[in-house]
Image: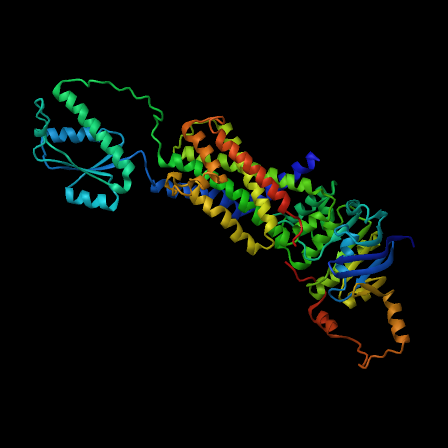
Length: 252
Length: 367
């Protein structure tokens, strides 16, 4: 599998604080790759360097064939991004947001087709600020796809969503990968990483402390003699919740 | 490149038209100011309010009162001296004239002027300008009556070249001030509030994650607001002319040129403030500190004569003073850009200062 992201000895400092301490990893084309870690582990800093939004202090990073250290502006054209804590301009309809970002990428797109791909056809003429949390996340994924990116970066895409909306978004992410787009996501929901990701890197204190397929990481842990004291349950509370409330999206 | 900026500008304008609160502040509020202040007719310089108590009640006193009523500058009310003096104390009269019981219009024998009936005149010291204009007109009326009754002619004729023949109403004075105010608000408050909110909510970050160059983003933001300033000026002027019968003496293109220059100044200051303030909570006090003093010291609602002489050398240098003066001179006196070159130069200097500040302070990222 050819790699589409290659990171070597990446370092980022904020004054005396070393947020990223020489990490290296590769992401294969067509993978769903997860970067996990507690808050403050350096996940967002790493992602923002790969997106060309921040300058690293050392190491190298090549994304979709672009050396982001040398040309951070060029990488923006080849990737799609969904940022944490970001928003779209107010008083724009959902459809106009797509057109606006197509303009920023210098492209002409079929806004309705992109909205249809994220199940927002009936919200095309709603103001984006009136959309629900899940709808807005879907809109932001549609926006991230306007330039037909080779890699899609999603920074904590399901934070704040209800279980139905989370499952809906996972489905969408799988569909995007099925079309050949590589997905790089950060999350601190471990169930999400386990279900969605082909491989995950666990980050803590600015370093990558583990990197493998979720199943392989679990197997390695068990091989070290780890046992859970609790009884193995056949279902959990989330299963109960979804059984009671169904998988239908609760929005509008 | 130009196409991208143009299309982005059009999208911004479309979003702006959907923003009710922005429309309120840029069009409805200034119109309300015009309506309220125009109706109050503050400091009506053109009018001298005169109370007349005719104690003579004869044909001559009636003729005299009629002549006074014929003076365009006077608005005459008649009443008993006690009532009229009370009105004067309240500030409703500038002059009160009492026509004595022995009033008559008869030739005065030479050297016996002392026998002439004497008008008693009370002047409002609080409105000295109006009172002295009123007294001067009254003296002129008496002179002309004297020549007519004594069948003589003035020994020296005076020909006055009327500089401002048109009567300047308060609303004529007010409208250019309101225009200047809205240009300032659109620039400073519009930019500072809009961009700090966009920065804080992560809108700018999201746009910076695309390959769209920041220069084009700024270009569209500036062009959008210059267009808004011109459209806003045209709407407000249109209403002023059609509804308030304001006469715009000077040339409209020159008025719009000053509008654009003033917008550039305040847009730059707005970008500087948007860089300085990092949260929406900081923007409100910062913009108030910059705009409020100018609102009261720069001759928007009142002539700058009302500003204490000590601070006037400073207030004369405020950008809003230059803008309001230039717009007012063009609108009310038909001045040309060359006539108001001092104010235009002041605005150019301010736009250079504002641009330097904006470049130094404005950032796309918070912190």
